[in-house]
View 1: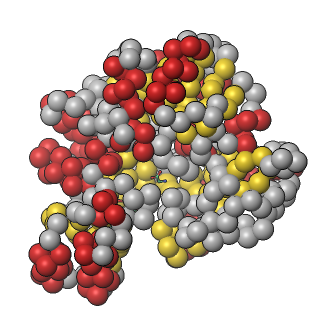
View 2: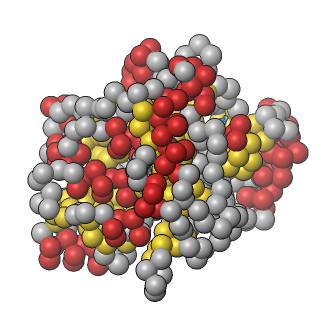
Length: 425
Ligand code: AMP
Ligand code: GLY
C-alpha cells in the first residue's frame, strides 16, 4: 500500500522511515518532506501543501491512509476535510485538536474532568491579569492561549517578568491573535517527561516514554526551543508513575473527550511534570507526536507502525500491542546558527555519510542546493540517534555518530540524556 505523511521535520522523517519498514508498504510520500526524506528508500517527496491538493493526490494515487505530523494542519481542520471526502487520515479533528491549539480549552477540559494540572485562570484584560499575578506572586507561568510555535510560554521567576509578559501579550499584541488571551498558572516543581499514546477515540496504545530537552544550552540554561534532544525510555517514568499517568491523565482524557462529544483520534502527547512523590501533572497537551521525541521512540519501535495505525483507524487499538527494543535511544539535535531567534539558512552540511556508521541521522531543516549539496534550511537541522544497551552507551553512540557532521554555526547540547544517566548509569 501507499501512504502519505504530512510535514517536513525530523518527526516526519522518523515516522515515514518507520512506516516504510513495513512489508505491506510500497511507497511513503512525504509532503513536502526534506533532503533526508528525499534520499530514503521507499520515500518520495511531493511538493504539495493545501488540503485540496493533498486530497486530490490521495484520490489519484490510492493512498491507503495519511498521517499528519505537525499541529498547524490539524488545528486548521485537515482531518475534518479528509474525512468529509472519505479519505482515511490519522489525527484529531479540529475540535479535538483544541487540546493543543487553545491552552484555555485544555485547562477548562482538565478542570471539568478532574485531570491533575496546575491551578490557573484565563484573562483577556491586562489589569485583571496583573492583579492575579500580584495576588499569586512568583514564580508563575504566563501562557499565550493559541499556537505560538513554542514561544508562547513565559516561566516568570519574578513578578516583574510576569507583568512584562502580560503586557507583551495583552497590550502590545506581540504574539498576535495567539496572545489575545492568556492562561496564568501556578509554577510546578519536578522533572518533565513526554507521555505519548495512540488513540482511536476509545482505546489507547501507549508509545515508549521519553524525555525532551527544551532549553538551548547545557544544564537547561538559555531560551526555550522546540527541543534540543530526547531519549527513550525515560527512567523518571517508573512503573508507578506510568500507571498513575494512565489512570489519572491519559484514560480520563480519552474518556472525557468522548463524553464531551469530540472523541480523540491520533497521537496524544501529555507533557508531564512529575513531582518528588511521583505524582504526575499535565503541563500541556499536544495533539501530535513530539519532535524530537519521535526520532528516538521510532528508533526503538519493533512493531509495524503501519499496522498499528491501521488498527487505530479501524478502532481496534485494544487488539494490538507495540513491541519496543530493550535498548535506550538517545537523539541529539543539531541546530542552525542563531536558533531559536532567527536561524541562518543555506550553510552546506558536511560529513553526513560518515555519521551513519554509529547512528541514524534524521533530517529536519535541510534542503538540497543546485549543486547537490545538502544545506541548512531551518532552525533544527538534524537529529542524530544512537542506540545502546544502557543510556551511557546510547549517548556515546549518538555523539560518535554526530562527530563527523559539520556546518557553519552548528549548535548542539553535550548533555542529552545526562538526567537518565544520573538515575540509571
Ligand atoms: P508548554 O509549551 O506548555 O509545554 O511549556 C513549555 C515549557 O515551559 C514546558 O516544557 C515547561 O518546561 C515549562 N512550563 C510550562 N508550564 C509550566 C508550569 N506550570 N510550571 C513549570 N514549568 C512550566
Ligand atoms: N518536543 C516538544 C514538542 O514536540 O512539543
